[in-house]
Amino acid sequence: MKKLLLIIALVLSASINAFSTDTVIRVRVTDFPPQYYIDDTGNWTGLDVELANAIIKEAGFKAKFIPTSWAAGLKHIEKGTLDMMMNMNKTAKRSKYANWIGPERKAQMALVVSEKNLGMPIKELNDFITISQTRKIRFGIQENLHYSNEFNNKMKNPQFMNSFEIVKNVKINPRKVKANHILGFFEEKFSMVYKIQNDPNYDGLVIHPFILQEEDVFFGISKKISLEVYEKLLGAFEKLEQDGTLESIRKRYSHL
Image (tube, rainbow, N blue to C red; front, side):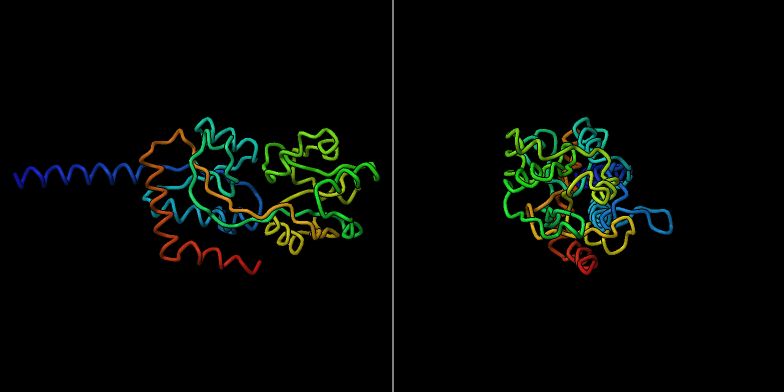
């Protein structure tokens, strides 16, 4: 009987190890430092990449980083052609096709404007209507992005909605602001501080005092992957959160 149990245990162990070693987690990335970027060795790195990599490795899996846009990434998560996205807001709509791990970290949604517009009197969402109508220029937003519950609900108001235009290529946002084609755009404050300090394309741009939202962001895991894989990733996150590994990664980027 003991010999039989030993054989069963060995078979199960081999099966688990094979499952872990061969499982590849497909992760959405994009060129957006300091969260995602390619280092001098040609590998993906950055805050969100390091956090994801640590969890995937702890779970016994391998990460495959796939560059794609935010909107396309959401569609791939829904279809199951991607397994993980980072920096996701948890919403009821996304919960239909994604499971959640986290919080990954906190994020602030800030307004980026030109230096000459730093003093724009924006203290609440209705101020965007007034300023856009007065100056006859709109603000830029991304498609399929959750800015805040209040903001997204406000977009049902035609006047508010007409104060914004959808900018599909976020890399042209700085150019559009400097050319006065849009008054400003929303982006995560952490990224924008880094860009303004390090990227010449952002010269002349500043962070406006108005902060749209501060909230937790999560790892979104496609519901198309098996429950066993999701639970392994969740367990890895909980272990690394408890032992301080993830917090040590966050702290290394906190000065940026």
